[in-house]
Length: 87
Length: 110
Image (tube, rainbow over all chains, first blue to last red; front, top):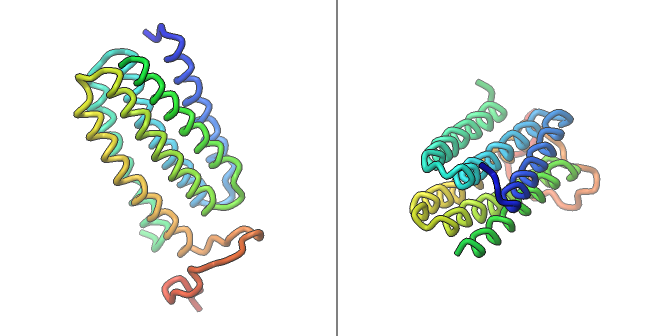
C-alpha cells in the first residue's frame, strides 16, 4: 500500500492535475478544447499507471501503461481526423 | 538510488501539475496545446524514468514506455492543433502574429 509520505504527495499532485484538466473539459468553449483536455488527461494517466505500479509493486501495471499509451495515441489521432474533415 | 528516483519522480509530477494548470488558465486553444504538450511530455517522461531509477529491474520497460510517450505525444497534439486550425477555431484577441494565414491550405474556404 501507499505507506511512504512521498507516494501520497505524488498521488495528490497528480490527482490535482487531473481535476484541473477535468474542469477545462467541462468548461471548454469549443470541441478542440475538450479534445486537448482529454488528451492531456490520457498522458497523465499513463504516468499514473507507472507510478501506481511502483507503489503497489506490481510489474503488470507497466504492460497496462504501454497498451494504454498506444490506445490513447490512436484515439487522439482519430479525434483530430474527425475534427478536421468529419467522418 | 531510491532517493534519486524519488527526486526525479517528484520533479515529473510537479511538471504534470503545471501542465494541467496551463490547460485551465491559458486563453486560447493553441496556448493550451503548447502548455499541455510541453509540460505533460516532460512530466510523464521524468515520472516514468524516475520509477525506473527507483526499481532498477523495471528500467528497460519504463524506458520503452517513456520513449513511446516522447515520440507519440507531440504527434497527436500536432494533429489536434492542425485540426482545430482547419475547423476554424479563432485565435484569442491578444495574439500578435498568425503565420498560418500565409499557407493556402489554411485559408478560409469560400
